[in-house]
Amino acid sequence: MPEAWNLNWPRALGGAEISADFRTEPEDFVVDELAFPEPCDDGEHVYLHIRKRGANTAWVAKQLAKLAGVRQLDVSYFGLKDRHAVTTQWFSVWLGQKPEADWLQINGDEVSLLQTFRGARKLRRGEHAGNRFTIRLRNIRGDRQAADKVLEQVREGIPNYFGEQRFGVSGGNLDLARQLAEEEGRCRKSEKAFAMSAARSWLFNQVLAERVNSKSWFECLDGEPEATPSGPLWGRGRNPTVGIAGELEERVLGEWQPWCNWLEHCGLKQERRPLVLRPEAFRYQWCGDNLELEFALPPGAFATALLREVANLVNVNSGT
Image (cartoon, rainbow, N blue to C red; front, side):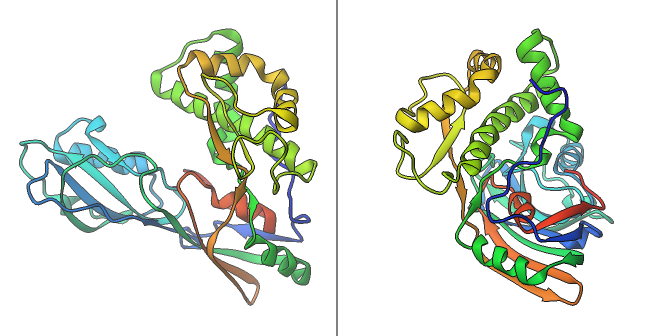
């Protein structure tokens, strides 16, 4: 087991040929949720379409709960969005028979209410169609012609890594996972959820990294359980992978058996995640010393997995 977490996963498209400043301003990272909840005039939930700048999703949810006079558990959303960014996303607030709040009070320097209407059900994680990204990388340094070759390959697919933000600052969520899995430590329920998610993501990335190194990430191996290459999201149940693919996963995850056992005891179910991530409507253009990119990704995919194939990023600001 590592003393320090190496989150520098192997690249697949030939290596980043340029360096760039990342998140210089929130407007350099724009995320728009691809979703439109179905209205229902007599529904007990209120749907709020919100634009936020420099604010994290959990903080906005907390402000909505306070404004409506409900529990934080009664506020939901399709997914967490980055803090140092400009994002639009949907929230739902279960009011039941409570009176409607004055939602315009949420407006301020960081948050703007775009629209609101009633709905019949709570919004749940990952149920939206995905996210559209508009990203500006500033102060490009390096070989642009070589970068063009990488950018053209991006359209065909990239490794579907979980992004660094999944693992916490300096791998803090992984530290907690190691404590819980190997030392039987204790923590709050919310912290345990972060640790479980980080542990599953880490194990998946380990398998994907091995497949990238062996140049087998883009094609199915003998024994794959699906028609497309995939990796494990560990949990309870039998790993469906056999043959060459099964031997590779068993070898890679061998030293992480305590983590696998812990995730099984947590009650998570064995699942699979695609190894290949194909961005939709991918476009890019050079604008002076900057590079601008537009693309859409499905729920659970990370824009940083795409960006790291293109450039070595200098994180001027970061956070979720």
